[in-house]
Every structure is written in structure tokens, then in C-alpha cells.
Amino acid sequence: MKYTIIKNINKAILVGAVLVGPAGCSDFLDEQAPSNLTTDIFYTIPDHAEAALATVYDRLRFMGEGANIFSNNWQLLEAMTGTSTTETAQNSDLNNLYSLSHDGNTTHIVNYWNGLYRVIAQANQLLEQVPKITMPDAQKTKILGEARFLRAGAYFTAVQLWGDVPLITKPQTIYSEDFKPTRASKEDVYKLIVEDLLAAEAAGLPWMDVSGRVNLAAVKTQLSKVYLTMAGFPLSKGASHYKLAADKAFEVITYANANPTTINLFTTYEDVHNERTENRLEHLFMLQYNAIVASNPMDNFYGNFKPINYNGPTGTGSSVPTRSFYDSYEKGDLRAKDQEGYFYTTYFTNGTGARFELGAPYVFKHFNRIANGTQGVAGTRLNNLNVPQIRYAETLLLYAEAQNEVGGPTQAAYDAMKRIRDRAKLTTPALGTYTQATFREAVWRERWHELAYEQITWFDMVRLRKVYNEKTNGFDNFVGHINLSTNKALEEKHLLLPIPRQEMLNNPNLKTQNPGYPN
Image 1 (cartoon, helix red, strand yellow):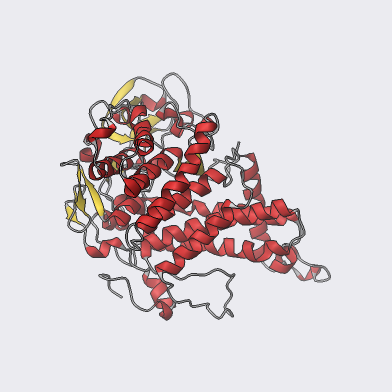
Image 2 (cartoon, one colour):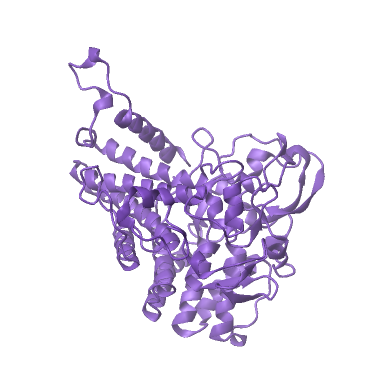
């Protein structure tokens, strides 16, 4: 299933070596040295366009790259939520995120800024050059649409994390007029995001794509999520955008209802983290991983040196569930059941042997049985598991939340939420027992419990200005909520991250730092 995308990523890596490699030797001065290729010379045939697109996809994997000892970049979006803690505490930058004492030098923050803008830069290069290539119109439109989706995703993450950010839409050189750009308003950034996604929606993409490329279901769900975010804080566009969000999610739901073998919820949670079901059914968009190129980067969710696979004791435990969040799942919720849901409290010695107690709950959502082994079955030692970015489960919850804001808890909104609870083997109160307010919080609870540890929760906290309270089962205001992981209270400044300090030093046009952080 990954052949197409992995093939193109390898091709793109070769292209990168060609474009930035060392200068050719003098023996070859009579011909065009490959290492001296320019963008004008390179972007000439359809294969070049496909290779350039593969490089944009490849850049997305920055989230799995290292952030010093026992940590990856993705932990930026987990540590601050209060739903996880650490068993190692050996990474000072990660500790600062957990304790909400991060600043513009924090490695994860710096890496996220750089990673997102590399995605944007690569997409901008493609969008500038590919239109010049002679190739079939349908193929060109599709490639441009995929690139715009990926650029929109990078900007959507950036604007949620930092607010006003530089808005760069053209390839940059040191001679560019805006080589040291100013920060654009959130309104302008969201305007580009919506424009990019609408272009992607009209690009002739298939509803699903088992190769792992962008598809129509992912685009429409992302549009729904963007509209829902715009309806909330900080733009507060309200009713109009709640309706846009509901309508766009419902387009996916309508297609899924008519084509349940193409888009649907998996029948078991095991399939959410199964190599054999990647890019299918519930997985609308994933980051592609193959151990030949790059292995799945989520193993910091493993407990601290537990003998859970063929290597014996392994894992760092630098991101593990808080007991309070694990205990907040309803009694009987299948998502909290050992090895059947999103957590595990036991595993098999060295992956294949006798069952043993782990001593605490750990995240099972990203655990690869095929690679690690399971009772009586040896592992492959190759962790090819993809990382989910958009699941149909979220499409259902986006619709339920947005439709409720439009006109209260309708039957369709109720049915969407109930499907999530039905899979968890939970009883859902009758529709008539809900008010708009109680249904709103019911959907939020499902988002916290269904989408946990997928780097989504932090963004919900920011757009809602609300945080789930595991003790009360209700929701606190963001400012003043105490993360039970460290007993630290969220402050107004935490709604945004600090601009990386080195960026401020290199580019005086960024001017002031985000409120509450030192310049």
C-alpha cells in the first residue's frame, strides 16, 4: 500500500541530493553537472513534479524527529495538555513543557517552527514551478491540490500555536523583498488556509487513496475542522462558521453512509493501530512510515524499560498517561480495556512470552503488534506503522459539535456522537435528555477520550478556552485550570507559544514576542 509514496519519497531524496550536493569536479565542466541543477532546469517533466510532491510529504515527518534525549518533536502537543506525564524526566526541554515553563529556547518549539516552515517552503517551490511543466492537466491539478492541502495544514498548525505568523507564499532567496517577513494577521493566515483547502477540494482527488496521498475525505474533514476552529477562539466567527463546519463534515458522512466499505469506523480499536489497515476506512490521512526510510516515531509512549518486545526491556516512558485521565473513562468503556482499546496494562514478556503486569496504564493506540510481537508470534522488528492525522471518528465528532452549535442536539448530531460511544460499548442517554449545553460537553468529552494522544487535544483547549477536568468530569476555563500531571495552572500566555528566540534575533521584523514571554 505504501509503494507509491515511498517510491516517490526515495526519488525526492535523490533530487534533494542533486539540488544541494557539492559542486561538480573540473573534469565535468564541459557538461551540465547534476549537482549544478537549478529549479528552472529541474522542473521540466511530470516525474519532477511527482518527486517534488513526495518531498513535501517527506517534510511532514519532522514531527517524529528527535528533540534531544528521550524525546520527539510531537511531544510538544502532548506535554502541555495535562493528560500525560513522564517516567524519566531526563529531558529538560520536555520537563519545561510539562511544567508550563517553556520559552523561546525550548527545543520542541524551535523544531516545530522550523519543521512547519520547511513544509511551507517545499510546497511553495512546487506551487511556483509545477505549473510551468508540460503534463496532463488532471495530473497537474491533482499535484497542485495535494501541495495546497499540505501547505494549509502547516499554516493551520502554525497559526494555532503562535497566532500571527509570517505568511510566505513564494519561494524565498536572500534577494526576496520579504526575506525577513513581518507577522501576518490571523485573519490573513486563515484566509490562505481556506483558499488552499478549497483549491484542494476542487482538484479531482479520489475520496480515499490507499497509497497514503491526500484524498477528498481528508480535505473536507480538514475544512470542517478549520471552520470549527474559526468559529471559536480567537477569531470567534460563530454561527456562520459552525454551519460551514457542520455542512462540510456532513458531506463526508453522507458519502460514508452510501459507501460504508470505503469510509467507516473500524469495528475494533485494534485496527486503529494495525499495519494492515493503514490508509483505509477510518484512516482518512496518515503520516507514512516505512522502516526502510523512517520507522514509526511514537515509541516514547512505551513504558520506561519494560520487556514488551523482542529487544527485552525497552522504551523511555517520557510520555505516559496520567492515572487521573485514564481513570476518567466511563466504567465499561472498551477504550480503557487492556489491549482491546487505547491503553494496555499488561503485555507479553519480550513480546511473545507470558503475560506480565506493566504496573500502570500505557498508550496502546500507537503500539505495533506486528513489529513488537504478540503472545506466541514473533515480531518483524520493522515498525512500519503510520501515524494517524485525520480519522473518520473525528469527522463524526466535528459534525456533532458544529451541528449542535447551529441548532441544538439534532437527531443527526446525536447519531454521530452515539456511533463513537456504541463502538466503546457505552450506553448513551436518549436524545431528549440533552440540552444544547449538556450535549456540547458530551461531545467535548468524547473528543478528549476518543482522540487522546493524537496531538489534537491541545488545539481543542486553545479554540474552546476550556479544559477537561478529570475530577469533576466537566470543563474548566483554560486560564486557571490546573494540569494534574504537574499541579501547574494554565495562564493566559499559554494560549500561544513563544516565537523561537533565534528567529527573533535573526529577523527584527518579527518585532514583539508573544505576550508573557521575554523578548
